[in-house]
Length: 119
Image 1 (cartoon, helix red, strand yellow):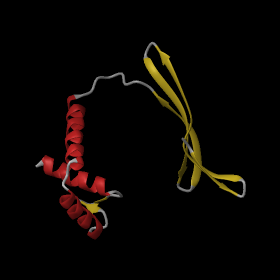
Image 2 (cartoon, rainbow, N blue to C red):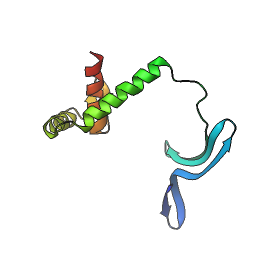
Image 3 (cartoon, one colour):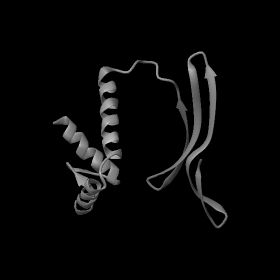
């Protein structure tokens, strides 16, 4: 669903999916979306096509998905005390870890856990 902002009865900006059409062919399910975004202060509205994947997952992609699942499960069942420690570190470092900035605590924690699983 798109988010619209109005100013004096005129559309100021639109963001999100404006329209979505889905159809099925012999190749599978396809979708065409009309999307609105504000990029660098300018309004952009464009069409985006989604098609089913044609190639099988590579071994590296399978491993990356498994690693992601493990990290997300660890975050979900993390004790509150450990979460608070990460929250304090997130606050003191202004969301920076390993030279990157993270906007969310969950992303910050995931970065920590990814480096721990690489070791």
